[in-house]
Image (cartoon, rainbow, N blue to C red; front, top):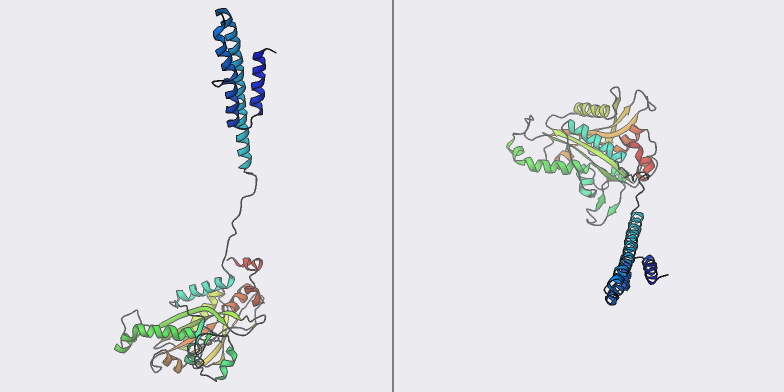
Length: 359
Ligand code: DAH
């Protein structure tokens, strides 16, 4: 092997051994740099004759070109390898199925509450929210259920810190306290009109705009079986004016039930009952004419004409203001609407069960 052939083969080996562009540039310097082996050979030509210079020069040039070619091949190879590495690291398998984002949905009881609000909203009822931790006054006493009233025993609940022994705080056992809370606010707002005995709002020509409200929300009792959960929902309804009667209750509630269940031939029965805050009082039962529950009477709400003592606690004169109230169970309505017979399923939080009610 001539000295030039050796240099070329050394250069190829040196370049081939490099793994990074920086290494390759260092290797290049050994051959083509200022004091590289080829450069040194060029410098050595100074002593040669003109003819020798020609042939030696041409030979060195060929070797130099061969080294430069090897260098650029290696550069390309390293760049390709780097690209491949990068592509592999950022590999994207376009044949993989797309990542799905789980679609949330409303709880079946929330769907019922929305439905109730929409239907009563269309009848001009306001929707009010109230506290779940109540005072003894709003939950019981103001609703004509004084301490030691036997009706309290059906509303055993959870007492919470806060309040006093004479007026403890408790988890509300029903949404009925919202009757008082809402009415008191309403009366406060319209006190001047009430006192002046005239109204400038709406078509109502009495001394105060009517109270027409529903109050849905969570309620609590010490109770747990297939049809009772310690936390459950209620929706209160209240309509007070100067000439609101039981007849209006019948009309409104029948209309509501038929719309809610999308059944025009659904029938209602008002069964005499007792609640301390209404007189007279009635349980409302419904009966479907078709479907699996056809012919059975199903209780859906308590109701009645608001008791004069309750009207008084609202800040109104019971001689002048009269109306009705009802309290229904949205959980029960949801069970009936979807044909579910165990209430606990709604509150177990099992997505497989809950995802079946998305409409
Ligand atoms: N609050 C009653 C309960 O939980 C239900 C009820 C009955 C509400 C009659 C009313 C009513 O407003 O008039 O059992």
